[in-house]
Length: 222
Image (cartoon, rainbow, N blue to C red):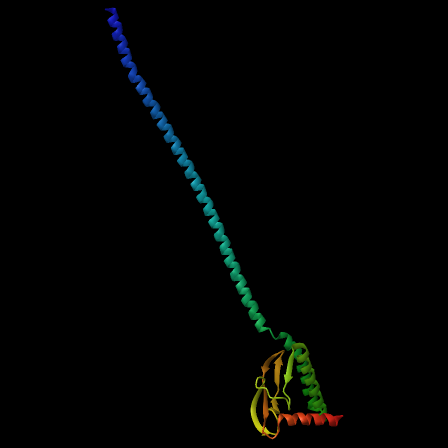
């Protein structure tokens, strides 16, 4: 009888032990799940913090680039304004040196005009004007490369001469018969064409005749 009682007690204890083990496993699983959730949340928070920090860095870089861009635009605008101003000043005062050099000639003309008021010899006035003219021409030629051209007898060149009249004459080729207005070159560029009267060949003189006559003149000069 006692043995049966002991067996029942053993079975009862065994039955009570099973739920305890299951509850322990469930608790462990819940704890593990909770820890994983916490770890996942911490990971997400860490990634979020990194993302926020990166966004702040990018915003700071963007602000820096914007500031540099605005400064560059301002510098460019200032440079453009200075360039326009310098070009305008260069245009406005481009002839300063030339005008300074011409002042001497103007002063000499003033003195000549004053002297002419009391002069009794016209030749003195003419000599003074001639001197001023030579001085001015020399200055323009030597300092500014301004060269006058056009003289009677020169070959006619439509590129540098402007014919305002012509006549048929005993010449072998077109030549300048008269110069009404001298032409001027600045270095190699024509800045004013010479206004001239042109002698055109009338057919009475040939090129060979001109060559023979030149040879005869050379022999006579010997």
